[in-house]
Length: 207
Image (tube, rainbow, N blue to C red):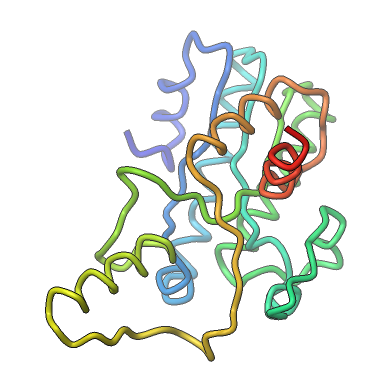
C-alpha cells in the first residue's frame, strides 16, 4: 500500500499492537541530494501512521530516523568526532531528507506527550546487508563500493569513481545489529531519539 495515504495507514495498523515505521522515499547521498522534495513527502507516512496508531490504540510505535538529522559540518572531519544525541540541535540537518526525519522525530515526541502514543526512535547510520539496493541510484556507500570494485575488476579498467578527496569516513551498521538494536530500543524506556550506531559499537566492545 502507499503509506503516504491516510486510508492505507489505517488499514495497515488495524488490529496491530506494535508498529514499526521503517518506510521512506530515500536512498544514498546521491539520491537524497537530488530528490529533496520527494524525501520531504515521507513526512506524510509518519503523520498518517501516527494518527492511525493513536486511533487504533497501538501499544508501541517505532520510528526509524537517520544520522542525516545532524548538521553536515559535524560529519566532515576525517578524524571522526563521535556524534552525540544532543548534537542535533541547534538544527541544521541534511537538506530535505534530514529535515523530514528531524521533524518526524518531534512529531513522535508530541504524539507521546499529548496522546500517549508510546513512540521510540533510533537514528540509523548506513544500514547494509543482504538484499540491499546496489545499483539504480538509491544504493548506499557499502553496496556502491562493492559494485564499483567488482565492475572495475570485470571490465579490466581497474579504476573507480569516488566522491570527495577519499579521506571521508562513515559509520556502517549491519542489518542484524540494526534489528537487535531496534528491538531493544522499542522495548526500552528510552523516550528520546538515540544513536543506534554508537550503542551497537559499545555493546560489541563490552561483550
